[in-house]
Length: 384
Ligand SMILES: *Cc1c(COP(=O)(O)O)cnc(C)c1O
Image 1 (cartoon, helix red, strand yellow):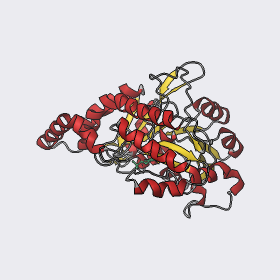
Image 2 (cartoon, helix red, strand yellow; image 1 turned 180 degrees about the vertical axis):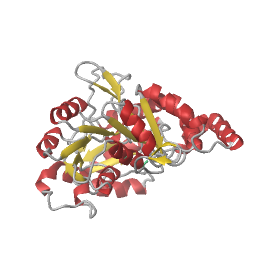
Image 3 (tube, rainbow, N blue to C red; image 1 turned 120 degrees about the vertical axis):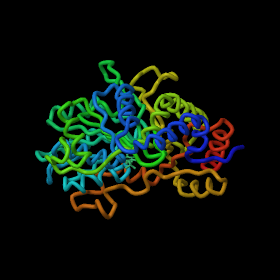
């Protein structure tokens, strides 16, 4: 059996080596390292893929979130609601801009933001909701967009883990994740579903005025050379990363399919097992067959409900099976984000998830033998 990896970027590179190598050599030879033709071409190709009017490339996913919030003109003291169970970048940029983060609990089955908790947290100071499409599946955008409209709030999608996923609205309309809210942010960190070979990110919007503002903010607030109209940042996607992304974008759907196939095999193996809760897919698209693209499995995350999660992590390590615990500490209990406003009983789900979740190896190169070995090892240990 091949060595099992959490993410197999080397194996994926083998399949696209020729395109990547020649694209990189071309950049070296033309020396258009920043804002070169590759960046513009990638921007257009991603706009087409997502069906969104504007893609604004930037340096990483964290910047993408920050710049989105700057572009919307959010001001110190404005409250921004987001999930307690996510990567820290989401709440970090809210705090950095001196906005007030309002963390709320999540749904125990999809791990995405709990709509009832969002609604309870809305105050006259609330300006935005940041749903995080965690582990590759969209949050309940029908409900989130309706709530936002009712209360006149911005919706900023944190799409770092879900690029390539779709969401089907109740009226049957289908859209790509990241293109549904007022603005979306994504990351091209190497291990993300569309990853480059360094750092990268992008902001998406259908709003022309906002897009113009964002394009200035990423470039020192400059709309005309050496005229600085607003305070901006320096956040660029470099040409080398754009070239890698151009080679991978045409394969993104195939990559997502391979992740989904691996997830289906895991789920078939774990189905009906006591003490193991499978990740739930919304299947808002209602087709439930292999064309369903509502979950792109950035992570395949189980819940181990008999208290053996930590022991399982150790056991898998001994068997040379890598795994991850995303996330081991709720944000409301992190030193940087703890606040007397928070009440532990409002975070019952997140507090339970951090004790139960485990993410198994998930990437485009997993084979049947590896999946069978991983799942039988997990079952053998949890239900021994
Ligand atoms: C990875 C990630 C980010 C940050 O992306 P970077 O490119 O690493 O800055 C933000 N939010 C979520 C949910 C992520 O998973």
